[in-house]
Amino acid sequence: MVVSGQVAVVTGANRGIGLEVSRQLAERNVHVVLTSRDKTKGQQALNHLLDRSLSVSLFQLDVTNSDAATRLCGHLVKTFGRVDILVNNAAIYLDEGDKLLDIPLETLRNSFDANFFGAYSLCKTLIPVMKKNGYGRVVNVSSGYGAMDAMNARTGAYKLSKLALNGLTQILASELKGTNIKVNAVDPGWVRTEMGGPSATRSPQEAARGIVWAATLDADGPTGKFLRDTKIVAW
Ligand code: NAP
Image (cartoon, rainbow, N blue to C red; front, side):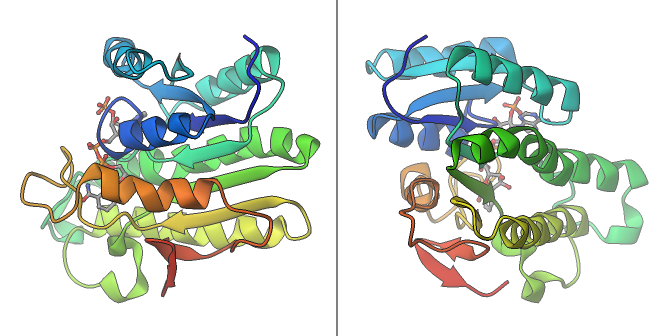
């Protein structure tokens, strides 16, 4: 497949914020590789964007499967020779309101597998391709629940997984200093998706805007920061 512009990968793109980020990026003439762990759900999301004549394609990816991340990388190199943007959006929210010592250890491990190790393994696989091409924008979709001042009682598995994701953002940005690869974390706010529920205060469209901004930063844009709606917020 020949594409004229940039190529982006969005994880968990079959619904919610990931689908909307994919739409907004594709509207900016970026070719978006939607990734979805479920092929049928991914195909439905893809069709939704293809109906709008957007440049999008699909790759099946469970972010907890590092072999699949390697296969994705091979596909991107073979098909496009590049990957410019990585949006680590996929996440699970398993322990709302639960106390940390009351949840099974599995819940903590599964939260880290999807929310932290998933992002880590995609960074590990795709950033070397960005390095070769001298350009990259990585956005880790985090949460206000990952901020230090959110480290109070309940929902600990989710909070700790996002805290670790925030730490990953800072370490990678620091290790990539001097390259044209930026790594930022974005808090989308409380959003009306399956995760956020119908009472949430923001639409996926509003939430996606700040993520797309971070995914398309100019050379003088921030790196290693926690962002919300284009503003830097406290870790
Ligand atoms: P969502 O509607 O629940 O969507 C989550 C997406 O992640 C789905 O596509 C889901 O796929 C995918 N996913 C989960 N585990 C996966 C895995 N192992 N491999 C691949 N994909 C996987 O949630 P959302 O509200 O759009 O959330 C998007 C991001 O925003 C997340 O990082 C979340 O933590 C963050 N966030 C959301 C809110 C909010 O209020 N909604 C607030 C703060 C932060 P399936 O359809 O197959 O389950």
